[in-house]
Length: 281
Image (cartoon, rainbow, N blue to C red; front, top):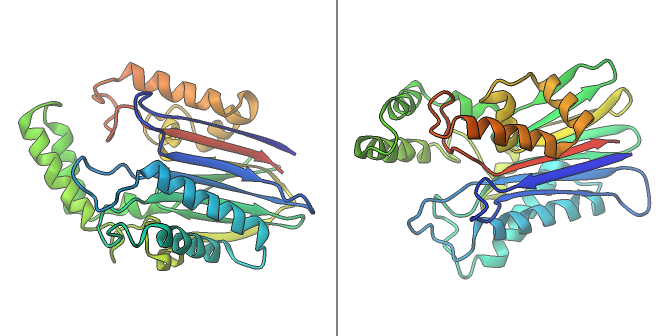
């Protein structure tokens, strides 16, 4: 079995909000991986005294422990229980009903001798590589399927000069429009304080036989394919398998540095936290 992971903050002056971990049970076959991409809150109050890294560490740690110690639970049940456990640790001190309470996107996978289970919530991705070289991306498309009016607002923001007052004002309106769709019907979902969100995740299972590798990416790493169009998902897996997870992050950093003002490749952040997990079970 081969396991490699790498993660790096987008800004070295700020804490990394991504979380990446793998566990191998001591008594038996199989293992599990968890990758979370914390949602950066706005500068104003968001109802919680805790940071996003605090949240992702606790949610990710709970998910990993439950995934390997309670194999009778589905990954959706694992996520639901981990959300409840994490919420209970700060329910008495924080406003968990706040729309911006700490939250994260989720990728998890668990494998046994026969089966690989998976779960994806929001815009991180899991790549399944098969023995024939084909790659199957497991994606939650809802963030890419926002209503046309919201997508039009985003395009209008990106058309305005970066750093201008007009762009800042339009950006705030766009952010409010997106906020109204977070964890709402017709919108998209992230893991925050409501355990019921686990039922919204994209989940399933595939036979382990014929599966060559699993690659989990936060959207900061996945932008190599999705934003910069440097290669397909299959190219992405080949890069990680051949040169390691850090090589993908390095390629993303080079692409970000070549377009510091986000002019050629519009994106919400010039540089983003990035995390990659590669497992050949």
